[in-house]
Amino acid sequence: MSFRIANKGVLVKGRFPRIVYLEDELFDWVNDPDRFLGELKEEGVEGDLFTFVQQGVDERSPRFDFYHEWESLAVLPITSFDAWWNHQIRTHERNRIRKAEKSGIEVRQVEFNEETVQSIKLIYDESPVRQGKPFWHYRKSLETLKKENGTFLERSEFLGAFYRGEMIGFVKLVHDEGVSSLMQIISMIGHRDKAPTNALLAKTIELCASKGIPYLRYSTWSRRGLGDFKRNHAFQQVEVPRYFVPLNLRGRLSLRLKLHRPIAELLPERLLDAAVTARNRLNARILGTKQGLPHGAAFDDDRMD
Image (tube, rainbow, N blue to C red; front, side, top):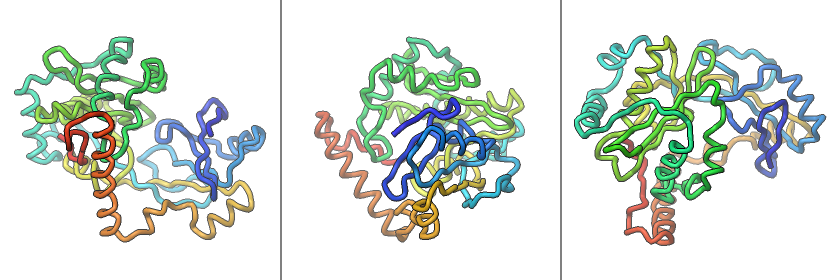
């Protein structure tokens, strides 16, 4: 279920516990949690726990007196583009960026308009599977994509990766206080050999450096999948407080029993890796067959450019 509280999108997921969180976590923030909790109560939102992440990456000490755990974010410290290029990024990724340029990939800023949304739809509709899971943007309407990608426009910039005049990848970059965040970075799987995603990331870092932005955030830290891509491009693991606030007796009980944690966190890593691999291949086979794709064509196996 979704709600609007204090002009922020709020979602409720799960059954026990029912967890309330911001729809656009890491891009929208709760800086007055007592007031926000009061508005949740006034609106009658039925949840057991409310969770939110502390804003910022430079000041990491807990600011609020609620129970917290540590949320691992992927953050790139930026001093200058030359420092990143010569001392931070790994050699293999540097060569991939050079390859993109030699392959004819051009990255430039684009306006968020009807033409850009149509190009985004073509990128999204290339495959029903991304990262081994059903791709939730696949075959959405233009109106839906315009609405979803049109959030935070007053502090966002878009970059497009072009090949022979066609936009084959894009970045949505959202600026915040002392940090900018990648809300979206994606390229067509069919052009992976040209390394457009690497080129997009390099251009994003160059843009941040030119604006004096000290940190670039790329979602959460992960051991598998995109984790290698982030590490190879010099992103680091940064831990910030994630707060959990019980809203009722069920919430207090679930927090005490640690029921707020995802089941995956309780599994041994070897078992989890095997399960993820099996899931990815099964999704690719089922969804690829349904869409009439050649065997294996829909299997995006978490490798990045």
